[in-house]
Length: 366
Image 1 (cartoon, rainbow, N blue to C red):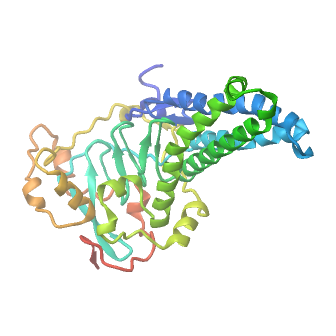
Image 2 (image 1 turned 30 degrees about the horizontal axis):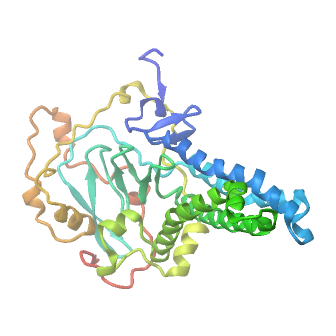
Image 3 (image 1 turned 180 degrees about the vertical axis):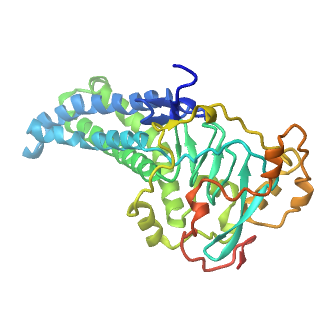
């Protein structure tokens, strides 16, 4: 392609993402792990539907399992999991826009959240101020709205726009494990009269025994994740916030109560994507590189970084000295104090996550 011709956004995107179908699908650099996850789900599911259920349909003592057509309906739990993982990976998780290079000295800015003032941090890579609950994914190299975590099993960041589908995926996977485990046991119990000894039974029903063992191990992982994320939904937390901020010792400004938390997650409209990766971009913006001075990055301790994000008092002046603008153009120097909160709609409009009923550490009422 001629360098002077405009290119689509996904072709010049500076994150570590991998795009498919002409920019319609976006994944992380570890997208190959999705194939492994698909095989781990599809393999046992196909074996279960093709052999175990067919045996139950012919050996059941009541008529409900004798019809093979009715028995094949039991493959629907696997279909639900397949639909969940497909929708999850077809939904852009909430990647923030990247701004053009400029020079910004301030490391933080204050933003009002439900009547409280919190500090938002500037991202030196994406060149924007992160909105509340956003974080930079080091794997995808993007800022993600309502960042939960990067899931290596689906090769995706889990964020604002795809979290509900991630929860559907892990909860339906948990149900599938319990389902296969139960009916595999029913198959063994129903056929124990066909074998003379326990050893012959184990050898004759080795697939059912494998599925029982496999699902028993798998349910500890996906079941544990389902329970953990159910707790996070009930308290309106993200995985990142739970491990980093520990809201059990602080007031969570986003918690609206269990019912409203579930309602806002599952029954609210998914906001539109901030990026149209198939849109055309000017040639001059395709080679933009970050020019922001990275001040204070080696000075700030881990605790001070958390305090800044939570709005606690930190000696900002000590970690953000007046930067050296040597090497920057006069235009960049002139624009030093002209930049406002960038790109994210949540920073350009009043932020409404719900009414805060208490005062959290580091949050001050306006």
